[in-house]
Length: 141
Ligand SMILES: [Zn+2]
Ligand SMILES: [Zn+2]
Image (tube, rainbow, N blue to C red):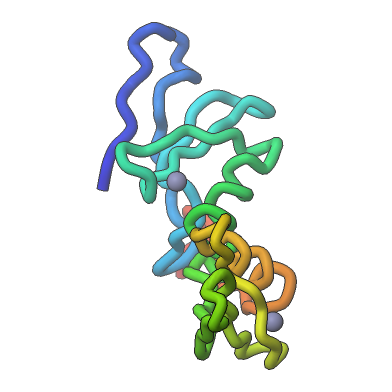
């Protein structure tokens, strides 16, 4: 797992990456590294190679994790993939069957080859249960 490099141009302690705990077991959404305080706080995406800093408060991080990597901010896991996919004979559109609504949803076109369309649908449609968080520090039984 890539670790963020310290920012040597910015000597302020707030600018140095600090480690965060995950919220629950298997949490793929919560950034393990953050930097900067308050509104300028950024999270480190370690699904990117070699990693990427994204703002947390303006939802850049949220957007990136969900629609670029397909990780739900609710479940902390990958969106459930289509049950089935089908390609039209013309070859310029692929659809995926959604387990939640039972509809065929366009997931790729000749112009858009990524899974962004599926992730967008999954975000709007799928119902995920938020896993139970670890108890706050010091209150473990
Ligand atoms: Zn990323
Ligand atoms: Zn659906």
